[in-house]
Image (cartoon, rainbow, N blue to C red; front, side, top):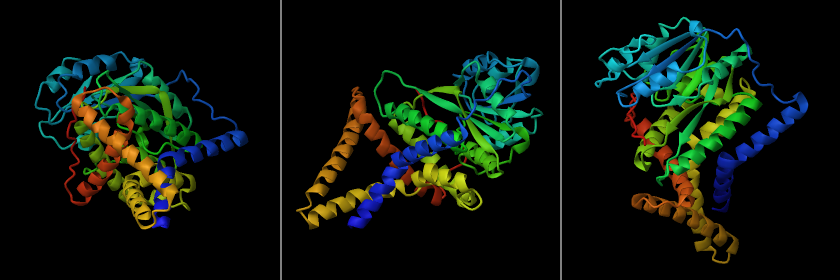
Length: 389
């Protein structure tokens, strides 16, 4: 029991904190040997670029998205805009059609986002493709900042940054903002060591000729597309100053729905990209993939349950183990805080201290639910829209 307890504790520590510490140390060692990684140098000869936006029933936001897109700084003679509205049953296609500078792709049938992306890629003639979600707003210089990285021929894709707009209303999504700030830090270190481990669909760019169509049943296609490029030997860079801003999920129920889908997609990705765990073929990338993604999407939630269960059994069988009583007390207080976070969310009371433990537990529960949903065949590849603030 003691061995199982400590294996679980060490695995949890490494997954959520230890990897970040190890990554930081490795980056510092690399910088001491090779010097700091140079930022992309501005190149007046920017590559031709296509911005692709897949939108489904976004009539309440699509006009704001289009205005934001048209205001982006990029040479107009090198920029092509494509909006795909397949399956939309509201006024989204009609609203897009009002802007002549945008190519509209629309079919009445909804086959999912990845099918729409494949269709858009048949229309792309540019060197670079940028994908962004319909419910996000980009900063003015985002496209230029992403495109600059491709002056380095080793870069096959560039991940932008997702920023979550947290409102004053208190709920579990206060933890979402904290989570993404930590994720951004890990992405920065991942990129400096070797490569970002998968891009998020809110904003990322790829070389057009490296695009590999993901299967139509892909759950998190952005992750598959970007890591398929890394599998070819190219790096996925990170550009924190190119960001996509979106509001937080409306509540924990909506956030849970999104996280369960991502977790199911994570299991699918691990199975499809299992060769990335081969340290002989991918010595650095496999270390990053396993540490940053695989452990979170597989063992971490089970380790949480095991650590708490073994802790209870240890103090029950041997009451003299005061040290383990202290650890059990710490675990109990953490889960009590998580429970209080849930209770306070129901009452809409603002005490953000409890929302980080709550979000942490929510995230790990989502992994368990995602694993079940994937292996039971209940997870559809088509996005189910989550309500946002």
